[in-house]
Image (cartoon, rainbow, N blue to C red; front, side, top):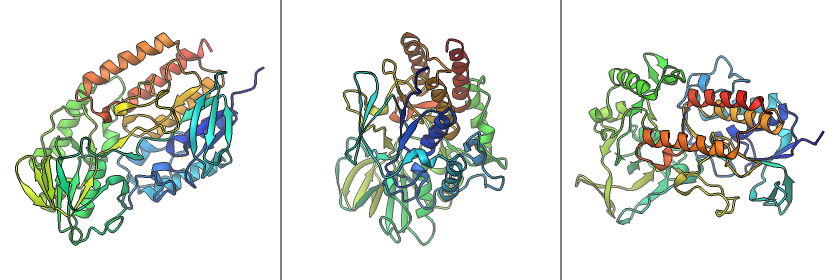
Length: 439
């Protein structure tokens, strides 16, 4: 009987620790390399690796019951939408409960991952060491490398500019008190930061600029967490979910354009929605002043596409993130425009022994999906599941991409990794059943 494969895992965030547990459960030898000094990744506020996008007031946008790992439920007293510190403590408990720390090497960065001629992997570390593995699992996340506007807006801005990745609180990295602040973007971070800084006594004025509209979902609908109501069975077409969600949300919370925001140019669930319980109240109170997209930067002023011009001291760019794989040679694997086609968001056909976990954007929580991916990959490495052949994977990918690009018509970088929570998990279970027979 051959020895089990030795596995390298990159990253000990919410996806990486789920992978470590899945491999441990199957008795597979492994080493997980984590650049920071602790687990938690994006949810570790002030992470020493400087890769966390968490700000001090951050709370989850998907309720705790949907977010928890299936084999380690959150304590019953956990609130529906806990803070980052509660989530970090939950991850700590998860790691301690299953004894996962022994597999993780902290303060260790993978600087290069190269495919060996014999099919294994050579992993170079920032310590100068080189290790060899039979399989590589990448779980380094995709919310740590800030994306700035491209191309830059015409003109020059004399004030200060930061990306939302660097925002910590109303006094760090800048003191926003008494400042005229422009927040650019319509994602979750933009809404959270705009709401926080617009509270009386902080920013003098808070402008929220957006070129395109998005649908905004409340955290609660009819007193129930929105994410619980929105998780329709996998067999329900997204078009039906779109109609039902729009009807329920607009009757309960209202429409974005009613509050001065751009009208979305797409149907509900045809782009990743933004979740905020507070933004409409801030807009309706005049604390947040909506503005269209930027036309030009002009010294200490910003000119918007409707011709209005405002004096601004600070711009916060909430313009998303790049999918970065810095340990790979770009000629080997890269993700231009955040597009990295993968079979079931896990496997690059033609490259054996390489797997990705958490490299997706679900309409729902990522943790249970990463947990399921870890189990699937672990079963495959343990010889319990056989993957389809390359031609089958390529056909599956082509079909999935056609459906994705039909639905997400704008082809924006944030929609290259989109999956539906229930449908994806159902599909993974089907692949596991099919793969178990030949294995």
